[in-house]
Image (cartoon, rainbow over all chains, first blue to last red; front, side, top):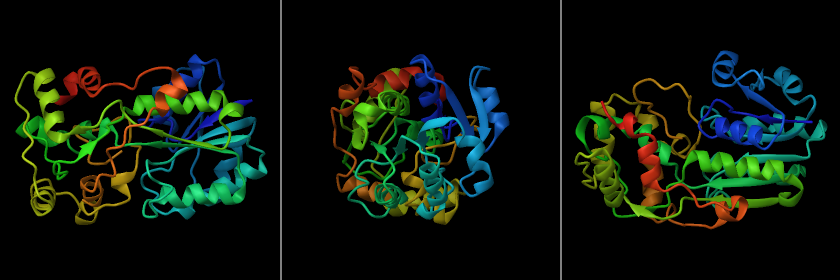
Length: 262
Length: 43
């Protein structure tokens, strides 16, 4: 039987695929663009279209599959958008869904991950919840612009600490539980980096490795919002974000600088 | 902004051992990540 990996061209998904192949599993990589998937993976990876809002795509993706890596696409902000696919997984007898959730999702009702976890539990689908911390990849996503152009980390995080995690590690952890699904059935795992850093410390590491000064001036929220809306021309609603800011995946082939949080 | 408001409240700082328990490896350090993406940071 195969393992279906949704969001397979994303930052976590492609590492799930790679790690599963290394473990000798048969993988079906799913996304909304076959072109993107076929460019990313070699011929030993089967690819398929999966659109959570189009039930007509579900069975082709799920046939001959017994385990699923489930990732909510960032553009689907409503938890309910995933319910039909979750229901279909139950009908198809999926033995383990590994859901890419979020650190703290069990207690924080605002991100859609909270409701998706609860729905999976309620429906009785065997699960593993992978709950990552804040992705290192955000620094080469939405925040890359200021690092490149201004030598500055323009992030309104104050003096707080973040346990930055590499999306690749989250992919490896997900592949591990999918491979050993019997051992990890119905468990949750919070995946973080090895240490918690302030943004001043982050700027220090960047300065050292890039061999040029990168500053962190601890911007306030008003300054941050003004800069992103007026200087970068980003959407006001986006800047206010809750959902997108907490989401994980992003297109693999980014333009110069991706505006999305992972 | 909501995300960083939460971060300021300390919701992003927890460090767990879960990755090591699953994989027997240490999580990637931030420095190793920056080295891997070294060229991405340049204009």
